[in-house]
Length: 302
Image 1 (cartoon, rainbow, N blue to C red):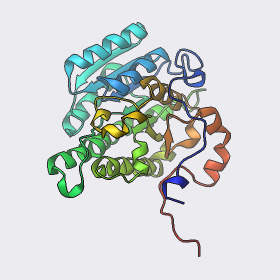
Image 2 (cartoon, rainbow, N blue to C red; image 1 turned 135 degrees about the vertical axis):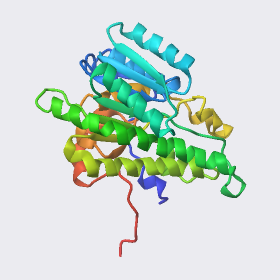
Image 3 (cartoon, helix red, strand yellow; image 1 turned 90 degrees about the horizontal axis):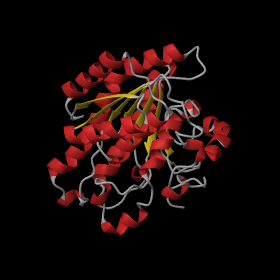
Image 4 (tube, helix red, strand yellow; image 1 turned 90 degrees about the vertical axis):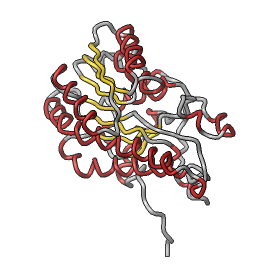
């Protein structure tokens, strides 16, 4: 058995939004009264996630990215999806610590707090073998995918802890944190060393957040958003483009579902947007008891 075979599940797979994760259906008003912070929200999956939270009744959504024009487009679409959802934005490079902190501070100043955060900004450059790689490009992938995520995590956690405390006595929960990972974290494909190692690190970071702040009320998830043909994903080898069959609405609905409180028991784990959430819940007790969906070393059974 190959290593990857033992890491894939047999859950029913989805490629588009379905009833259980529909922000306008089963998840309607699940984000009511909440403020959501999303990095990398100017296009693709990040933009779809902002729209989905508006559809789910979010009180406010704060979006960041490197393009002001693209942010304004997302803001317009958020307001179209729900005119009652307030939306603000700031140009922000997640690899710049000062800019990340300023954006989070501005969000809190405008909206009074943060209840859920989605560290969506990412980088995926053209694949190349390590010995032939461009050193700047290789390390840039790590800087965006890991350092950029860390900066968001570092400065949003105090606000999420406060959210978790505020919601402790309510029927809904707060303090949700989504880190965008990838199924690539579970593979070792030639030429993908920068991207796949950085996403593997994201999964481990998620586990550490749970260890450090789970008792503070933080619910953190490392999420594979599905195979979506975004501008970034187009940098993958063309031979893999046939796998990019998922819609941005799939992952956006899945993230809204995670932040609704239905999966708080799965905090600290890697989860795929493709997995059927109703089936996932059926295996809740086994997943928790056997500490599944985390990164571990497979060894000999002597």
